Amino acid sequence: MQVPDFATLATAYGCVGLRCDRAEDVDATIEAAMAVDDQPVVVDFRVSQDAMVWPMVAAGTSNDDIQHARDVRPDFGEDE
Image 1 (tube, rainbow, N blue to C red):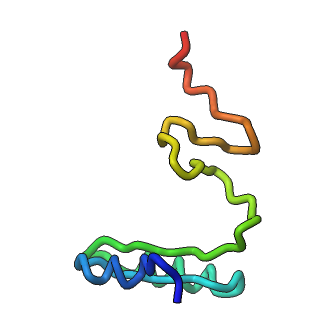
Image 2 (image 1 turned 45 degrees about the horizontal axis):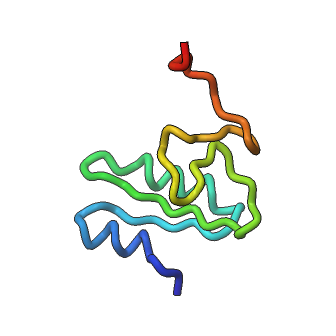
Image 3 (image 1 turned 180 degrees about the horizontal axis):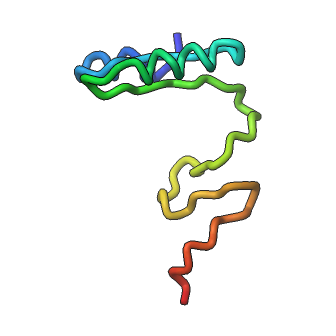
């Protein structure tokens, strides 16, 4: 069992909770999520710990620290 179980947690809060563990199930999982039009959907895509998934917000950091590649942040122009 994965902790936290986001799909079960989503269901407990009245959402549809989906989990995708295999690459070959990605399309079907997205289709299932898109078919729901009357409540929120949470999709838990499970990847290996060393997967480089982008864009990424590192654990424990602000969403303002989003990266779209290793150590590269998008330029939103707010430093001007």
